[in-house]
Length: 165
Image (cartoon, rainbow, N blue to C red; front, side, top):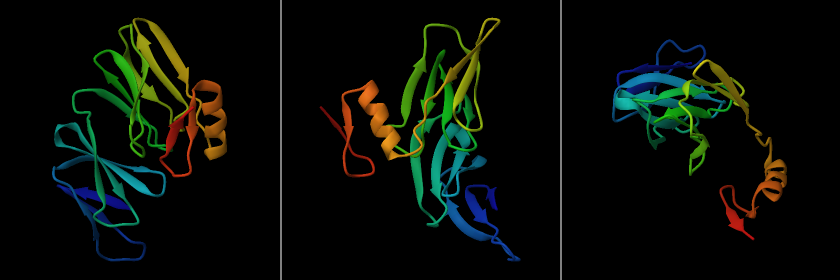
């Protein structure tokens, strides 16, 4: 279990009587959530967002995204974030860089939400409810098949490598 207290994230280990330091952020934490079993995401004053590694105390990555004045919704399972930004809908993945993909624009969208499993995004435009199905790869092999169908990109040997044909 994790708790935010001011600018610090504390961990409460099972069976322990005291809280243990996990990480310190540069700003006061307003919201704290989990992304799977490996990471926490912390939103701080002004809408700043940080990724915190659970296995490595004091490992904090500034996501370089400011979500303070936008409407955002996060998937509890995947950590994907759907963002309404100046009327357009973007999808953020805090676990990889570049982390922002453009999903939709050209209409006046409102009330953007992402499903808990990260596979659907919905938004309203006027009195109409719109739903997008996101095709998410479950593993590297599926990602390779998707790349073959959709782009001229090819996967390389590293975890974050990408090349072009």
